[in-house]
Length: 355
Image (cartoon, rainbow, N blue to C red; front, side, top):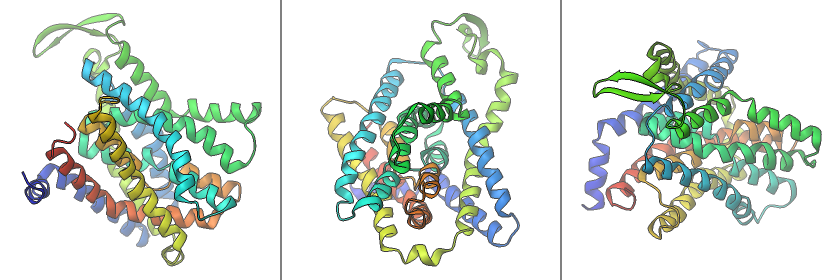
């Protein structure tokens, strides 16, 4: 199958095109609603809080309530390892990417490039395109992200050493975060479901034994609200992204060459680096990864500036204007680029580079 045939197949796939159109359309709907003042700035902040404190935790927990098998376990471990490896690599690679910048500006651009909005921007798109499996993989991959964000990211932006009080504060923020709690609870259930106390349940295939914490099987009435809450994730996140875009002035960001250079590195170069390295690791058998695993990583790494990273820059008065411009422009570039990344990933799949 040649490239043109693959592109035609991809662009006529209703599932893929539906996911792409839905994300872009709802983001622009959020933009329109905010511009027309149908929703105000306060409403967009509430939407963001609901997504981060309720919808994404529900989505993360729900994604782990599935049977475990050798393939998914191996994939999960590969993504966990790659999560730590890629963030360490990016810390050094960004030194090269921004070698023409010096001092504080270079430090800020490096941190903003290492840490994207993987949770708020990436996960809803992964959910829409790759379903529960993609969400589970993104949750595992994001463990390393949070470890480095609240340690390396904080140290570089604050300019202080991680003393006992700072470490305690950051550890608290990290481990008391609803998303982290849901992720580790779900990961525990998924990994140890065969060792937990078992309950006999009736399924379409007959009676089988499942872990008592598999509430999708043992307590379906409790699992049902989880499905409703997780379904809120993508539409609410996209509405909030659109509303946030409408609230920031475009002119200054569009005229910033530094912001444009950063946005290309963050949204285009960093995901491309992941594809190249993961392809080599996959074909050599060093770190086997499936197509869904690769696609999850690429979409997460193509996300725009992380809110926490930008907040660090503003809080510690480190290139706060540049950080705000980078955040806005990278979000616009990511919204435009994401459909292309999804199509490119489908081409990679159809070429048989990842299965």
